[in-house]
Image (tube, rainbow, N blue to C red; front, side, top):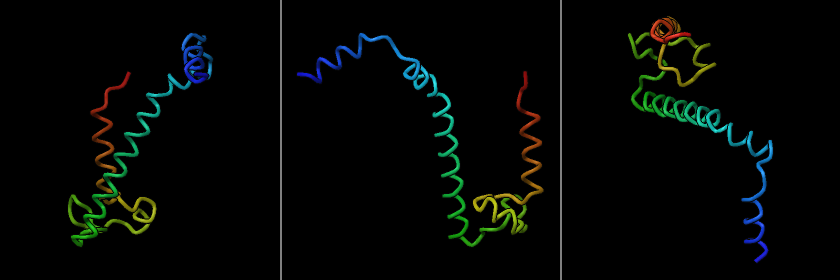
Length: 97
């Protein structure tokens, strides 16, 4: 009985600043979840490359991925040269304000 009464009271109480802040953060949390999901997919793809023997090879030209790059981002499918080209291409397609 007390729980029901507490729920009723909480629905009629004015929203606190903390409650408002937590409700407005959902886009940031959603973006973080999307990022984490994308990273998990990249790790799964890297595990697939390990299984088929192509891990450490750039998926563009089959050349080796730099050891330092693999140490920093083990799931990367691209050598530095091709990653930079992709980033430049993506930046030219991204509209800016």
